[in-house]
Image (cartoon, rainbow, N blue to C red; front, side, top):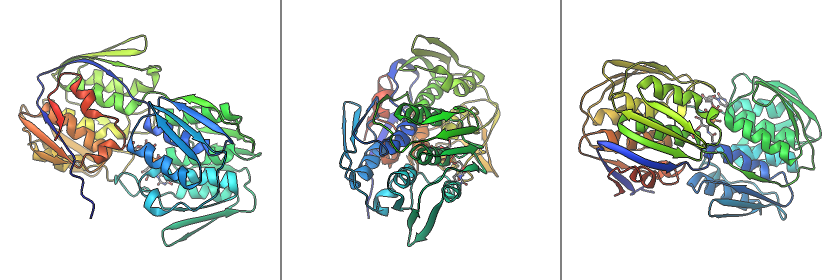
Length: 420
Ligand code: EPZ
């Protein structure tokens, strides 16, 4: 049995001050890596985060004889000698985004065999919306012993309405549709920044996409997509984690690398509602807070609403607010693993159906808590900065899937935090 022995130890910080440079976006770069399979030659991705999920995605490409190299946050992907292979479940189960190779492999080779995707345990996470769209594109799909076996006598364009604006399904179908010389219409598509960036990338490769940023995407693809270079955007969820952290304690913090603040609007709105003061200066934002958090009602939702990925972090922050706060989770039916761990710190918190109810307290105390998924793990680090005494967060490999170095970032703000 594999055991994660790595942990983070953090002490309550009375004040945070300093600058953090925000890493490149995980959820933007993963679909872009998958899309690169469609080009012949060398694609270059700048500002690529050095995180476990990127490594896992590269490992999958390596199985297809694609060479990948990540040096100083520059990822090169050479598909010159790409060769079809089945992708084994022991690799696909490492991350959810492995399923995005389905669209890319089908457009490139007309068939694809891969194990079921993994990812954070935050709900059922079915892939029916992906598969229904691919079926309409003339793909036959069988599932045998945990392997998806897909083949097509020729992918066709289609007019498909997604029953829910799934980010991953929109990305998968965008990639498949961009790699074939047909017209595809996706209705009810996701509008998340990660989808917008993928559209821009596919356009630069040679696809023609109309309706970017709306729920109707019209894609005219081509089998001759070219390899290009791309500069990844900042990670809005990492930036949001640090904005919420800075809101929760007395702070004066600057985040750099924020080239397009519009992707953060929903998160900034929540931090301001909680009591923080935020201004933008060039490509950075400054946040100041007196650490007096206001209680309130919040809801997660599809973009542009508040992201579900920050729900656990918001729950941590609301432990400090006087009065009752409520967070309604509308995207994932089981994303409540933060609650049991915050109880160990002394929080007055419970789940009622799809709501987290938090009664703010003056004092919460450090304890040993366990990361069980990526964002919940980051939320526990935030809680540790807020709790009296020391908090130890175990199983931090979950956090390393998406944060380049959360300890380095928070230590640079003056907190007493280290790998244990
Ligand atoms: C992406 O996951 C992100 N992951 C998630 O971030 C994020 O929480 C999520 O979008 C929502 O914003 C990546 O980009 C790698 P969905 P994804 O398909 O694409 C249901 C993180 O921490 N659904 O939009 O998997 C699903 O069960 C991760 O970085 C179906 O029912 O999310 C969920 O309830 C965690 N059938 C809802 O839709 C399907 O075929 C949203 O899922 C697909 C999804």
